[in-house]
Length: 268
Ligand SMILES: Nc1ncnc2c1ncn2[C@@H]1O[C@H](COP(=O)(O)OP(=O)(O)OP(=O)(O)O)[C@@H](O)[C@H]1O
Ligand SMILES: [Mg+2]
View (cartoon, rainbow, N blue to C red):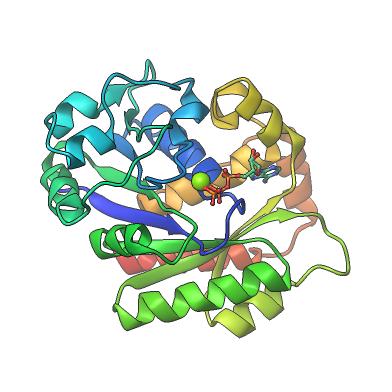
């Protein structure tokens, strides 16, 4: 088995790329038992390690790209089985021409590799873009994030990299927000997850653990579980009582569920 390499991108900071990679990685490794690696490709502003309490690892992706250590030395195993390739918090400029090669050499060791991308249109994000098989874009429901998303769509399309879907994050359900329909219409991408602005996510970052570990039944975490399942061609059955009661009154699938099913079908 060779790992699929999936990137999580936005050309705007703070929309939730790192949070998404941390939670999906945690779920794929712990709940689905997949050999999962999460990679911090945000080399000038890395934060992925912080989601797992890893502030100053001995070796990082920076050391690997500088040729100081082999990539396996910079990969750490979390007690849940998740593997993490962090970058140095005190970042420095490194040559990126071998990034893709290093990442692709890891394929035989994993089922899935998730790449946390930088927020800028830069050499770093181009290196990350060139290394992934497909990507998801993350946006918040506002015009500033949408305009960055449109820029990212254009760059990914120029590079002929498959965009598998759009993740709407930090939704508050207010009528001034851009809707699911507007985001789909303007980006011409399927929205595969709608994640609400959720204090549990913020609180878990302060506890240096993904919400998926701390609050496995939290609504946002369950949305991440559904997306994680779709990435590996499985269905997630939400067995919470609230969902069971809700399903008695709900007609059919929600649109993001349909979109996830399509993403899943296109892979399996
Ligand atoms: N659904 C959510 N609800 C509430 N807070 C969230 C949610 N998703 C992310 N956050 C918070 O928003 C902040 C930015 O998230 P994150 O670091 O994942 O964004 P990012 O896109 O990776 O940012 P950067 O581009 O700077 O790397 C963090 O404090 C995180 O805890
Ligand atoms: Mg980030």
